[in-house]
Image 1 (tube, rainbow, N blue to C red):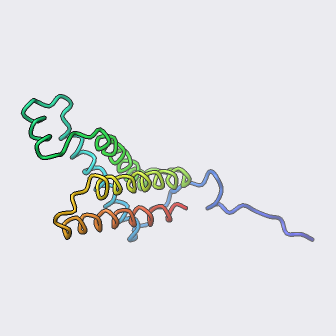
Image 2 (tube, rainbow, N blue to C red; image 1 turned 45 degrees about the horizontal axis):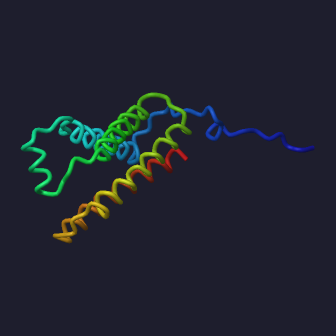
Image 3 (spheres, rainbow, N blue to C red; image 1 turned 180 degrees about the vertical axis):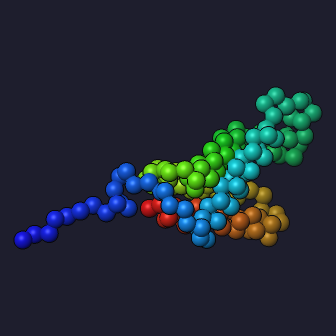
Length: 150
């Protein structure tokens, strides 16, 4: 007689994260959420939709034009941080969290490429390398959180 196949509750499409478990991934998710929220807020609060002529001249003189990509990334960072924080305290489908963290990681890779390579000033090299390492640490943290919901 053949065994009846059953679907595991953890892999069912409607599986939700309901149990609170305080472990290192829980703390890491809180820290990453706070980082993303604050990083997004810093750029959004500092963004000036109608800069003065003096500010435009200064930003052109130092070679840092207002790039709208930075604002878009900041908005995505803020929303992602809120979603990561909310996911810890509200039941959310694990599939949604998996997709959300994957999208955040992809946007973060784009940010790394733009900020550290395309618009990069490699001088001084050690400062650039330190900033790249910090970005990669956050990317690895996002990967760990993503694996948690896989």
